[in-house]
Length: 83
Image (cartoon, rainbow, N blue to C red):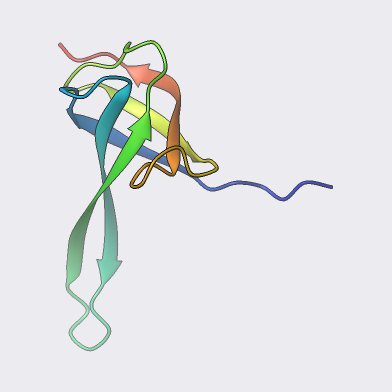
């Protein structure tokens, strides 16, 4: 049985490259000592085969085999279009 690949939801912050988008994923984490909730942002380069994504779109990305030097994620679906 094939293992589940990681899926993340984030917002497209750049679509200037061909067939590639930069997706910023925001997660929350509690500080271990003080308990304050921290927001952490991480950027992923994701493969967008048909150049459908635009800046501001909420997308779901999935882990994939290495596509290029920095691309290890692919866009699965566009959840919400930018206004």
